[in-house]
Image (cartoon, rainbow, N blue to C red; front, side):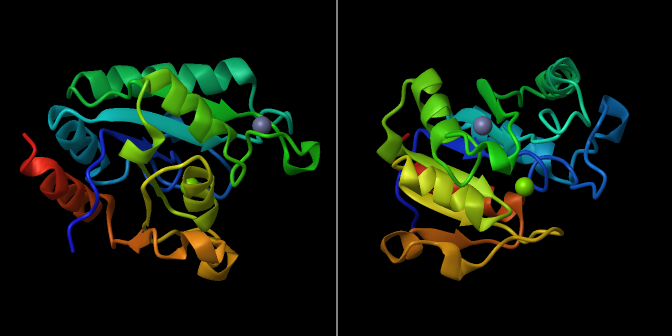
Length: 191
Ligand SMILES: [Mg+2]
Ligand SMILES: [Zn+2]
């Protein structure tokens, strides 16, 4: 079945763009792009889609990684992606730990709201790709048209965590590359 047409794609970072690390990505040398992620980003971008990165980085408030270090990792990631015309149009992260009960830690919708605003797109013309159901809930709560969940090497949560009203908007794909094929296919006839 064809996916709804979107103009922007929000993506989780760890486990979607780069490998999850049990001990967290603390510096650029620990940031390893997942196979196929850079080419997927390039394909989405060259299809005319806006790309937003939305990531929980509680390591900041937990004092495991300095905020400036997270931003350094993102600027190096952007530079690496730019070499392949695959960089994000906007990046948003939540630095808070769960106990702080902020409005931006996924599954709260704050990061998706921020990215959608920065990209100046209609929420209904966006989708979210993550490796946990918290990613999906964040995006769908902010009005994303649908959510794609790919397999996680970490605790992905459960489909049962997704509010019933959102459940039929959650699609499962085996890889980011396959999700990318499907998203590009869905917008083809409009180009
Ligand atoms: Mg993740
Ligand atoms: Zn937050």
